[in-house]
Every structure is written in C-alpha cells, then in structure tokens.
Length: 126
Image 1 (tube, rainbow, N blue to C red):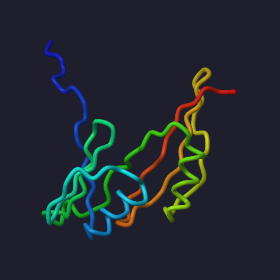
Image 2 (cartoon, one colour; image 1 turned 180 degrees about the vertical axis):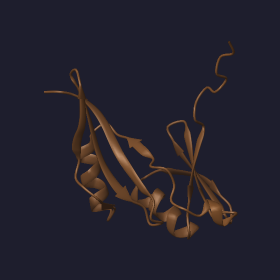
Image 3 (cartoon, helix red, strand yellow; image 1 turned 90 degrees about the vertical axis):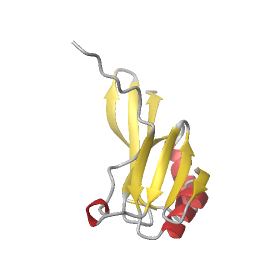
C-alpha cells in the first residue's frame, strides 16, 4: 500500500475583489507580514504557511474562500486588539469544545472581501 506523499499545506489561497484593500486589511489590521505582491496577487507569511490573496482568474474562483483558522496564544487579547483595529467579528471568543483538560476557543470575523475567517486557541482548562 502506497503512503500519502503530502507532507503539509504550504499555501492557502483567498479570493479578493480589491487587492489593495485586502492587502491593507491583512497587513495593517491582522498584522501579517507581506512577503511580496504583484498586480493581481499578494503573499503573506503566517508561521511557515503562505497566505495568497489573489484576484480570481476565472469567475469560478471568485466566490468566498474556505474558512482560515488563525491560531493564537491568547484569543481574548488578540480579539480585543483586532476589534481596536476595526475588524468586524460575528461573535465573541467562546469555547467550542473541551477534550480532557484542553479547551478549544474560537471567534469568527469577516475580511474586507466578504470571506469569513476565525481565530482559534487551545488552552489548558482551569
């Protein structure tokens, strides 16, 4: 039986409508490091994973992306910082699961292009 050759996810693509507006959101509001950009794409570093923002080449790629879950150490602190940066959240940080002594917390937000993403944090239960 052949083993899976896939090692990891190296890049996630997110469709955007206005690239400059999206670059400003991901760089200035979320605080991601912009690696480089072209007229139709921008690449951000996210701890070993590249996040690609791109103007869709075809209509079939112009729809909302999958949800990107950004892992953070302190979800409540990060949430407050991003609220201060005028990021629009759908909800407040809340626990979605508890397995043993580990709680998984999430909160969801929209980018400027209508894509829904989330912050997530796994913490030791008190």
